[in-house]
Structure formats: C-alpha cells, structure tokens
Image 1 (cartoon, rainbow, N blue to C red):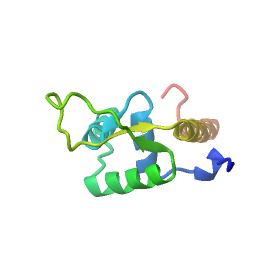
Image 2: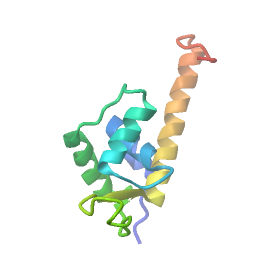
Image 3: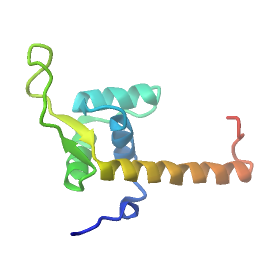
Image 4: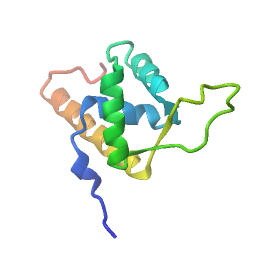
Length: 118
C-alpha cells in the first residue's frame, strides 16, 4: 500500500489553500466554494470559474477532495451541481499548510514586521 506524505503537497497554491479551507467545515458545490472564499476574505480573494475548476480538478486527482455522491433534495437544489468534500488526506494537508503559514507569521512578528495583536 502506498502511503502518501502530506508534506509533499506543500506549499499549497493560494487557490488550493482557499478551496480546502472552505471545505474544512462542510461540503460545498463550486459556486458555494467561490462565495465562501469571497466572504471569508472580505472580497480580497475572488476565485474565477477557470481558476476554481482547474484547482478542483487537481485536488480531486491528488485525493485531497472528493466529489460527494449524495445530493440535496432536487426540489431544493440544481441537480447539475457537483458537491465536494475534503478527504482525510486533504485535512492533513490543510492543517500542515496552516501551521506552515502560522510559523511564517510568527517569524514576521519576531522581525517586527507585524504587530502580534494585529
């Protein structure tokens, strides 16, 4: 059995980081991911459809996210939407990337480039 080292995926590209982060608490469809990223970044990050779906395709191929089989009630949702969820590997990778970024912020604070209280 091949064991995949989550470290091999680091550093993540920004789009991949935002997609994984948006899926950390719930499954979402593509447009829902776009909205979550825009909302969580106060509009600073906007993933266009090309960037989003190229990144999703890569994340699925790498086993970091998966298309979910279950769909909401067709009366409540568009049946053409594809829903995605983070995998166990994806969760490991996003946690490692968040730690890596936090370490970088700590270094910037130590160099007095950032105020530790923001």
